[in-house]
Amino acid sequence: MGTGDNRSPFPCAPITMSDEQAEFAAYFRARRDVVRRTAYLLCGDWHFAEDLAQLAFLRLASAWRKVRDHGALDAYVHTILIRTYVAENRRWFRRRERLTGDFGAASAGAVGLDTDHDVSERMAMVEALRRLPPRQRAVVVARYYADLDVSATADALRCSTGTVKSQTSRALRALKDHVTIDEEVPDAAPRPA
Image (cartoon, rainbow, N blue to C red; front, top):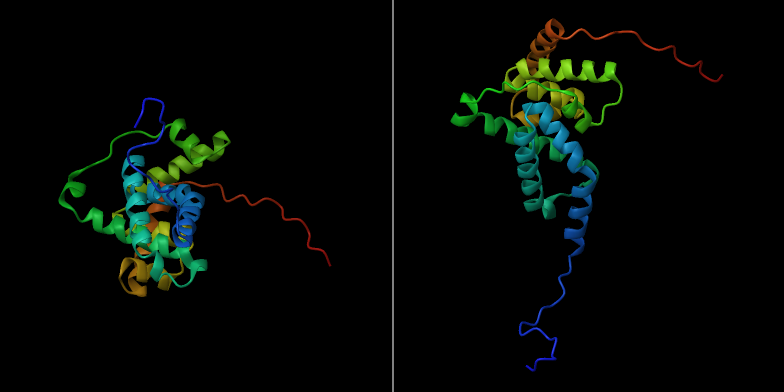
């Protein structure tokens, strides 16, 4: 090659994505923040939440071709996320680790909260969630944040529906002891006749 020649000595083909890869990439871009926030509610640590979300998406990517119902992807990802969280909590180094940091407005801003009242309520809820044992926390997040029903939660946690119900009951009792939430409901607009 001469000095004025701009050709590379290594021919490169343009990198193109298959339709499946493009679908996965689009799903990842659309849902990564939601999965990360769900992971944060599970573990209470943004760094661990990042790891959990990455593991969940890696497992989804490896099973992408096997997924038949793309309308149920959110439930599938939440199942993967919850199973990953429970498995990671069984590791010896996770059992020894205790989070001691206090959550401030920076954490609340990262979640996208607006008002001071809303921030304080949500931060109190996050702190109360951190006090729950991992399985109870997983049940609460699956049922009330990820909106999984009892049987889907039982499937995600690989336990019986009775276990989900009892864990939910215990967790809600514990949460009521730690969180005071205003039960004031705004007046509903009258329904059109």
